[in-house]
Amino acid sequence: MKKLYLLAAMALFALVGNAQKKVAINTFSGTDITKYAGAECDVTMNRLVFNGWNTIALPFAVSEAELNEALGSDCRLERLVGVDSNGKELVLNFQDCKSTGIEPNIPYILYYSGETGMKKLAKVAYLEDGVASLTFKANNNSAVVTMSGTKKRIEADGLYGVLAKDNSEAKFVSVDDVTGGFAATRCFVTVSTGNQAILKTNHLAEGEVTAIESVVKKGENADIYNLSGIKVANKVSGLQPGIYIVNGKKVRVK
Image (cartoon, rainbow, N blue to C red; front, side, top):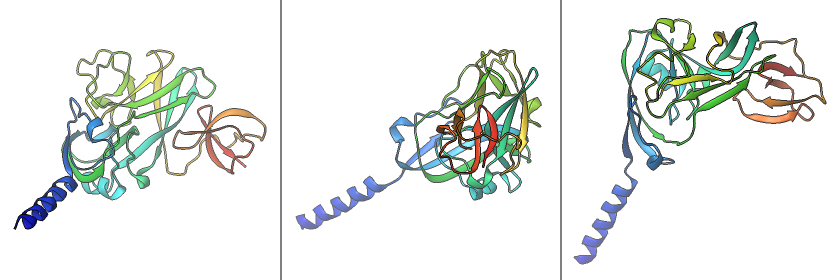
């Protein structure tokens, strides 16, 4: 009998040990992810989504199908792939990446065509702790632009964000005077030259390339990034033909 009780207790312990932890992502003040990092969890997130462009960065992956289910098949997802300079303007190039879905700890802009309101996203997912950030140097300009995601509510001083009145085009503007700051899971932009720059958003289709005429020749030295914003080399020699980000500009290596 004691043996049966022991076996039952061991089975119960195994079930409890294997049970997925329930985690509610707080999209205002934030949720401490460190204690769940690397664990498969039963995740629930209720997020206010505005009609138009929103920003988003999450500690877990969301597939294209899951985005369509939560926000409709006409929702759009784009990530920063480079920065161009146009006189006094800095042009933020965002490219469609919906087919790959949301990757953990990557900042995005997200388009929603429905009515403004709370949207629920619930799934079993691995939570990843990390910093959501993409950085690019502007082409023909000394400015360095960084887009980051928030894990907890932060103040807005010195930052650029998308105000609700500007979200039809995802226009990033200085938000020094916004007292509400940035709530968790949102994204903001910083510019190394200060918050006096004029930012303009450019939307690119998936696979679209800007500056086709800019071809990097073999032997030239430059910081070279892939389209995910990861540095892959500092010279063209040895690179496979393809599209890369060089000095904040998309170029084709032949």
